[in-house]
Image 1 (cartoon, rainbow, N blue to C red):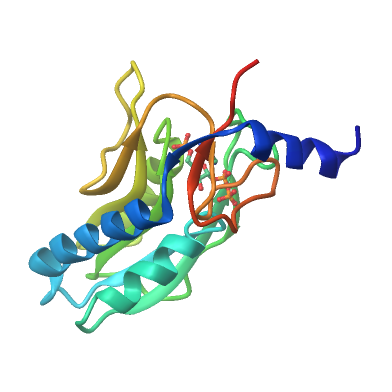
Image 2: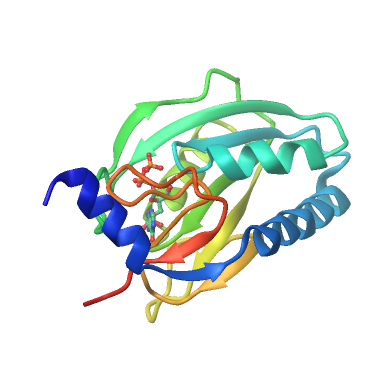
Length: 182
Ligand SMILES: O=P(O)(O)OC[C@H]1O[C@H](OP(=O)(O)OP(=O)(O)O)[C@H](O)[C@@H]1O
Ligand code: HPA
């Protein structure tokens, strides 16, 4: 089996958890709550690359107030479905000192990535840090951080679509799928 045929087979066998319409409604709900809370906060929105590209690109046009956009690239999964050490590939160019910071990510899994980025922002003088995630994964153990804004909740399964990858692929899918266990 070639890599590409494996990638295609994973999608064919996967279970669809959320349709594109459900994702869209979830992002609208998040935007409404964020607007109610932070329309006067002049926030810096940090897109957590790569996974958050899709949700950030869809959330921002729904936030009708002044904000700045920057990004941070921290990765610990690579092409794996289990997390490892954190690799910092890019840090924000914006001065975070005294700023309200909104972290946007695709999935809050074990919470290690977002907890580290939150701590980075606070160490660099951020006034307040809030976290928005498209999907919060239900895990049996407590996480080192919690999200303030959650689009959807899912069980403890490996998911892809809407920015989330399976071995680097399928971030482009409009629906959210869970890998089917054998
Ligand atoms: O809560 P955690 O268990 O720390 O996992 C969540 C993080 O893992 C994924 O990033 P990944 O390391 O896959 O990098 P990527 O976004 O570039 O794919 C995802 O986009 C989150 O940032
Ligand atoms: O379930 C997941 N899917 C994609 N990327 C991820 N990063 C952490 N958990 C996941």
